[in-house]
Length: 501
Ligand code: SF4
Image (cartoon, rainbow, N blue to C red; front, side, top):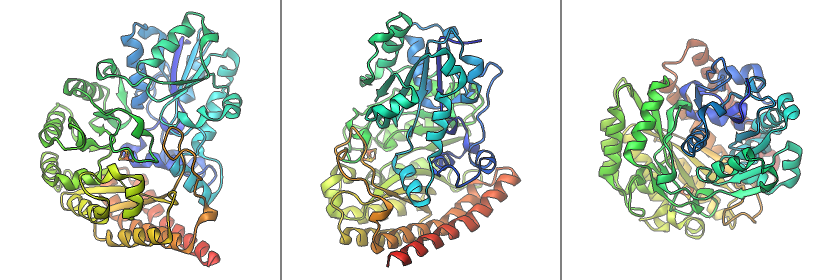
């Protein structure tokens, strides 16, 4: 049976990743590097699907669009959040709209570009998106195709790709207010009025609706936007909003009813929940964690992102969070969050990311990073950090300082992923030159090696915690991958570096 409105995503986003959100980054490994028969069972098993082709758990962005449509009067019978492998069940002649969410539609996001450049091969998510949009049911019934999600900027600026993929309209930014208006126009027969690119209105909190179904690993929003305004980052153009406690708790309960046994609280800096500007409202943050953790059925809470400056400006908040979440106990040995180091250079930080350091000064940044890692480590949080190579204006001295900083983080349980600078549309650095493999210097090689030596130590240690509840096949396979894969990767970096020297 077909539906007038079908919401879906590419296959790399339709997975619970064995409950380990960071496995989702495996989609950035180029197609061909790992065969599908290993990749899908090991890193990206299919999310559960109902008989009608609907996803039991879908990404939070799709769930928000679904709830926005429902709150604007669309009938639940007309909408399905569908599994991408089941389009033949849900797309037919009655289908007017196919709305696709994508994190990285052309595979040119920072992580994918870095791995693709180092290893070669097409990005897996780009390949899966093409397959989805060229599905026989889509080609036959020709619904209006919308593309949104965090990676929408990539196709907005590429008319040839839009044409090749058959995308009618790209929605860049938020869809809560904009998508229902666009979809209504299509259903009212005004297809020709739909522009090729739409910049979505920033939704006021009262226009954001509680989700109506489970999300991938229970990921739900607690804040939107970021006021730190790093020059390379898309959220810097967004207004910061904290969602009301009632909506957050409703979203938690929906997830528990859908079968999840915990949630991940998502925000660009979760520690800024209910903050006034960039000062931490410690009571609001700890109260949020306490309330969510006390919802019946919640066995764990993950945290998506925090900033190192927030950790250091309020170590007592981290301590209280660790106490509430019972970290350091056999039940919850560790928890993790993503943080951005980006560079160790105070000069680059001052030029491109002053807000990231607030309330500290750019010259204090290396100490803020070390202190943030120390506080996290002592409170059983694992920092999953990113470094950016080739930021505009980077000097050899900047690279050296960053390498020294990475080496000084060795004692703290953490992972550090080095990425190549990629200019993203809608950011202040959108016209700058991307960094590629051919721009690597011996100093960059040292930095890459420092990051992967760090990971070679900590990945296997951390997998002991994260993998302990997984089935034996997955546990052993990932053990094998970590034991042999990272040293192999490190060897390859050293070999390439030797050639460059
Ligand atoms: S702190 Fe993070 S989310 Fe905020 S603007 Fe900087 S990079 Fe983006």
